[in-house]
Length: 421
Image 1 (cartoon, rainbow, N blue to C red):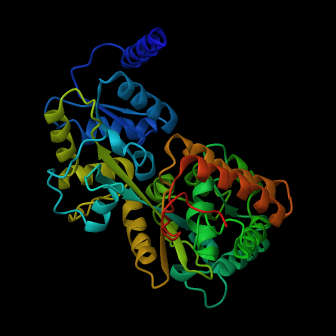
Image 2 (image 1 turned 60 degrees about the horizontal axis):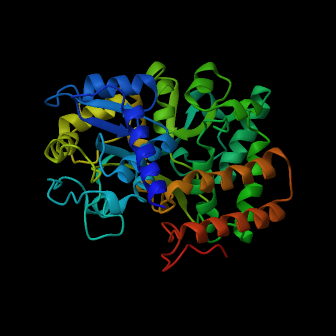
Image 3 (image 1 turned 90 degrees about the vertical axis):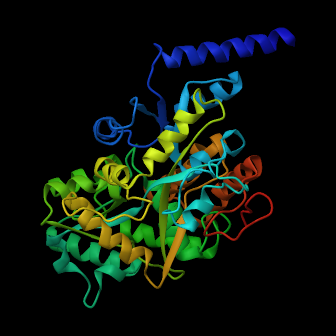
């Protein structure tokens, strides 16, 4: 047993050494955000270049990101100075993060700071930036809106009617959906469609209301460009004209607004019977207990909260500031277009905010896959909605019991694992 423990420790140390590569003098900012090459370069050149001593910003997919953290924690020492990740990605690490209560955060709202405690009494991460998802449309499609429809307060029924009219007028389906391999389709089902009909992401997964939601999406799919199964970023088919109406993350719509700002509009997600559900994307910065230089790490976290750094981050990533600050007039068109639409959605009378999944540890990918598999079986394979929801509910229930993850908004709080009714 002792030899096995030594072997595991040795393997962990070797893994860290291999991942670390040559010794670096700059602090390592290990992040799941700003992964596209262009965004990573902007983070290094435009956001972090003024930090004293420089920063080695490295972005990774969630899996390798978590593997490296776990390896360093297991070894008891590491090279990661600061972690950057979404709320749900950080939520499984609370026991291994430094308390950041002493960091000056007065200009960040209490609600966001409370999220950063991850259910503990300590400040486990500091909110870093925020974003959400929006609808976008080519202005050529506005003429096909249902009579009397308000773009800022559409319902799912009105969206379906709009997509149908657009398809009939243009000779083909022009609604676009990011259903490609790298598309964020699962976020639409988790944070928008299902909560709008069920007021739930997990507990009411197989309810009658959930059946209604999926049947509504089947109606919408009739007028969806079949190439959507290849789309990962909706900005591209919007620019080519393959689609005229689309849903996606604000950062994945930005090129369309920036390249042809006079041709596109942004607007809130539709509403269902339970409200206008939308998913808030909150990213935070945290310090692992294995950080090599704690003072340098805290200085970097404080640097990320400066108003000028927050504005630079907005320019680099299209994620909006978490601190109260005046935005300059020369921001990209995508920000000017997205900002009012986000405000209209988050401040709507029927607004129903939802959070990214949390408490799932390294099972986040399996959780997402439940929604992807449900989509593929119901929409792409045409299987019976009720049967698919019953099958997938069993997978979801097993996953929730395995992870012991309690419910998060919009589901009601639970003492134990979030139930799947």
